[in-house]
Amino acid sequence: MDYMASIITDLHDAERMGTEHVYQSTRNRINDFINGSTLSFNDITTLWLQAFQNYLLKRQLSWNTISTYMRILRAVYYRAVDDGLAPFRPRLFKGVYTGIRGTTKRAIGEQTLRQLKLPTGKSERLENARQLFMLLFMLRGIPFVDIAYMRRRDLNGNMLTYRRRKTGAWLSVHIEPQAMQLIEHLKNNNPTSPYLFPIISATGAEGYKQYCNALRCFNYRLKQLADNLQSKDVKLSSYTARHSWATLANYHNFQPELICNAMGHSSVKVTETYFKRHTDEQIHEMNHRILTQLLDDSAFPQPPHNQAG
Image 1 (cartoon, rainbow, N blue to C red):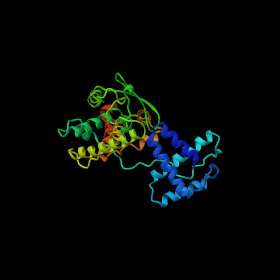
Image 2 (tube, one colour):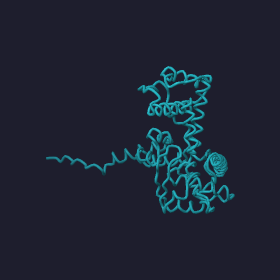
Image 3 (cartoon, rainbow, N blue to C red):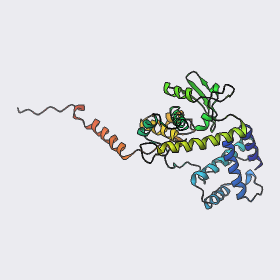
């Protein structure tokens, strides 16, 4: 528990507040499970992990939440192994769930995206929310947190190079002209601010508080924006742009590995949870195209007719 506390302190010092929150939540759950007693790395066995998982299940936590706690615990354990503080036990986490289950898909279709290309004609705040949403989409579904913490120096001409707040992966995005227009309109007008966009102005805990408030406001305005769309039952959030970009790339038959790299995911499995299922109409159209191409008589030479001797 002391080792986890030291990691949480490091995350705080590195201003990785979101990750710090997840680690702290995991530590709190473990502390509740062991009733505040001591816990060594030798205590963490397959049976202990299964008992911890059962404890979480009894508290009605979702499998994705349980997986998050287990993956954080696994990361702490392997880090301690590297530091020589824990014995290495192969397949230690095999008996508990560390996967990712796809939840309700947040992607929207091309028709809705085309509607969002057009100005709202509403308030300036709602119009800025629409433009920011489209910018997230145009920048390969960039997460809102990375836009919020984007610095001026990350933009060099028509190239945007940044490090993902969540994973630390470096990504480079070529900015298309339409995206550059949105950047010019939305960018920070305060010359003294190091941030590219006027979403946050502070650092540390205060900056994280500003980010959380901005995210809540953004999602609220996206909900208002969705209510004004012609498409019915459309739900918009900061994640919708990311899921929609991944799904659209998948629909256009780009390789999952390519989409995975473009989004900075650690594995294709993570990327596939973003994909929205194909509709029956799309599946019918796929089958129609396959059969049309295969059975088109013009694509095959006709055998010669038998002629009477």
